[in-house]
Structure formats: structure tokens, C-alpha cells
Figure: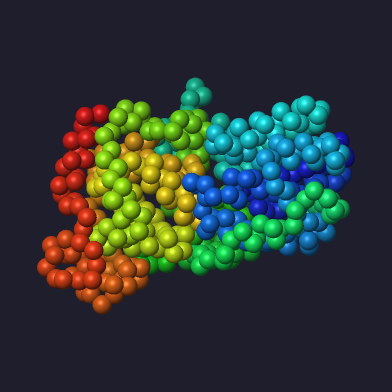
Length: 453
């Protein structure tokens, strides 16, 4: 083997099987040190930290530890800036190969550049691999090499490309020797109080979902109804790829045939990751920069009510309360909630983006940003600005019996759907907030704001 000892750093690839970077390390080094680095920004409170997401990650790490133990290895935990940990491992452990799988946000690219610089300064080989997506951003571009900014042509091109079949991992050359400066996992598991999350982390849990994919044959029809359990709940597993996107792709093809609606969602994931890679300015402002001039009202009082789930709009409040309690929000409801914040309350979409980041179990920077800019009509291939969701019509259409609303808003549990869908008319005195705005009036205001840009 060309290398004696490799350091493989797990990040958003918490699995042994079909892990491209890990496989390279195992094939090319006599011994591989499996590592996970907790960074200060992950552990300390920050504006993007989601305890639900962190708990899911910790549970996934526990599962990964068990899988490594079965192979005779162990997972080593470190705490510091990644480049500092890599430098320490090179010097103290005799590392001659460092391997990672790529991520595509500005933060991730900057982090990996720092790691590569450290490796070069110590004359150590650094390798990074495209593992997270069906296709790397540079792989799915126009004929002249320009990136796509519209999903449909992106999708039509992407589905022509071969998705690599998943590869098993039978290697056992993992290191298990003690490392004095590594931390015990309990140090990090104790930072959270266990909360009631929507689902448990770990590869074993993801594989359970993959085994039941055939039940989603009506996904395209039923996915918009939040009172139905009609979505796969694979999103947090794809955030940390406890199963690879390739495993999910071929699992869906086997269960539902080619080009299913669920498979299409994998390509949306690739698309938003590509946008993040080629257009990093989206993390600082609108994709279409003319919309940075929108006159946001940003009412602190309205934003507080929004974040509490007490706006007086039942479908919006139900979605917020579901997320606050479980870390999950149904996708149709996410669209309604985002549209409401931006086009009814006239609050900057970035405030909503950060709020979701702090609470979603499946928070992914590129996807969260892409979805918020879609709802705000500021992003690439976004809904037209004149398309403004009416929350009252949305709840009648997608929660006609108010089953979802009643589940998350107990003060409305004894009211009839007729009452709940007409609360804005204030025909009955109920123990629930009066709507904080008039949708019709605010929609007109939104149109005037966008037309000026």
C-alpha cells in the first residue's frame, strides 16, 4: 500500500458503506484512523445551531461507533478547528494521508482549503472526494461549462448521467490504538438534554426507511397533505448521509421505478447544492440581486409572534409549533409558512432562514437557503413574486378537516373545521389569537413592493 497511516475525517457522511473517501483511505493505507472533529461553532450556541439536528447527528455517531466496533475499529473524537487537529495528528500519529469527502458551501470550502494547506506544509497527501450528491456540481453543467440556474433543464441533463452503483465496504484495517489527545464521546453527548425529535438518527434507522419505500407509490398525490404520513422522512439521513444518495436513488428505482417523484427530490437536492457552489453570494443576499432592495418592514412584534406560533393563522402556527416541538415541519407547510413570513408580514427571508436553521432536524445550508429564496421569489427558478399563498385557502385545500391543525394547536381541538377555516371572519369567540394581519391587504402591499425592484 502506498501509505502507512491515513486520517479519514467523517463529517456529513456518517456511514461505512458506499463511502467514497473512506473506501479510498482503506484501499490505499495500511491503517486508517476514523475521526470526527467537533468544532467550537458546533458545540457553542450560535445563530445556526439546531439542537434537534445536533441530537440526530450524535445518535448517528453512536450508530457509526457500533459499526466500527464490529469491524474491530473505533471512532476517535477531537475538539478544535479542523486544520489544527489535522496538524496535531500528522505530527503525533505519523499520518501521511488525510482524506475527506467534499461539501460545497463557502464555509466548507474554506475549511477544506485550510486542511489542505496544513497537509502541504507537512508534505502530507490530501485527498477530497465527491460523495454527498448523485453528481458533483461541476459534473452537471451546460455544454459550455456554465452552471444551470433553472431546475428543469438541470434535471433533464442530470438524469442522463449514470449514478454510480453503491459499493459495499468489507475492509477492516481501522486503527483502534489509544490516542491521548482524543476525547471520549460522552463529553459531547452530555451537552444536550434528550428532546422529543421527529425521528432517531443512525444508519439502522435509515435502512428501515429504505426497506419500506414501496409504500410511497402515491407520494406525488399525497405528499401535500400534512395530516397524512406520506413523506419518506429521509431528509435528515441525507443531511448526514447515514445512507448515501446513491443508495437512496437505487432503492427508489427498485421500489417505485425510474423517475419517481421521490427520485426527483434527490435532484432538487443536487440543484440547490450546485447553486450554493457556483453562486456563494446567495448566503449573503438574494440570488437575483435586484431583490436586495426590497423594503422589508421587519416588525419585531410580528416576528416574535411568528416564532411562537401565535399569528392567528392556524396552518402557519401549526407548522411552527410542530417544528419547535419535534424539529420537523411538513414540506407543504414549510412553503406556506415561508410565504407568510415574507409576503404577509414583510419580514426578510434571511430571518426565516436562520430561524429554521436553529430548529430543523434536517437543516442543510444549501437546501434551506434555496427553499427560502424560492418562497421569497428572490432565488433562481423561484416562484413568481405575484404568486402569494393565501394561508386560509391553503389550509382548506390541504387540511380540509383541520386534522393537522388540531394536532398542533390544542386550543382549537374542539372547534369544527368550518370555524377554524373562517377565523379571519371572527364569527365566533375562540381561545386563539386574532390574525395579526389581513392577508388580502398585505398581499397587495407585497405586489407593490416587488414591482418597484
